[in-house]
Image 1 (cartoon, one colour):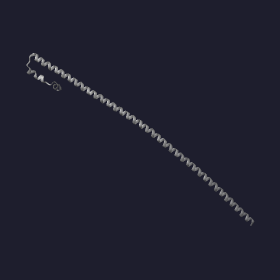
Image 2 (cartoon, helix red, strand yellow; image 1 turned 120 degrees about the vertical axis):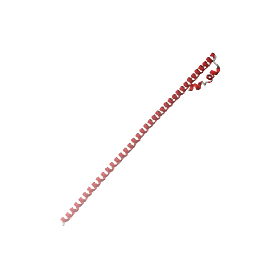
Image 3 (tube, helix red, strand yellow; image 1 turned 90 degrees about the vertical axis):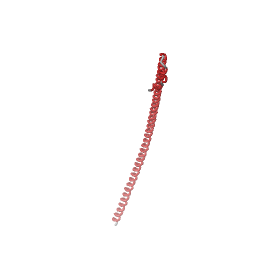
Image 4 (cartoon, one colour; image 1 turned 60 degrees about the vertical axis):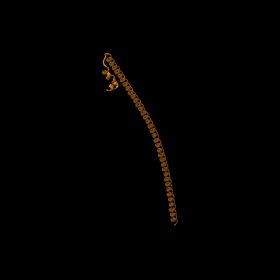
Length: 155
């Protein structure tokens, strides 16, 4: 019986040792699992922080690019507007010159016609005087005297 008791005692002791050993293994496994969970959580937080920082950098880069594009667009619009105004000014100046030339040409034509009219008047007067000097009757050169020189020149 003593042997049985000792065997049972050893068996109990062995079971307790095994149970303690199993508990120790279980505690270590839980501890490792907890440490692994903490490491995973840390990695996830680092990844999330990196993702957030990348998003902030991307937003900042996009904002900067949009500012540069807006500035470029504004400069191009200003340059285009300046070019249009310059073209308008050139066109207006060209039109003024053409209009001035047109009026100058009209003035020259008018002066030329006035000179032609004066020459025709002088010529008519000379013909009338020559007819009078030669003694031709006034009824014959009356038509020459009544001639409208301007109307005659316009034909």
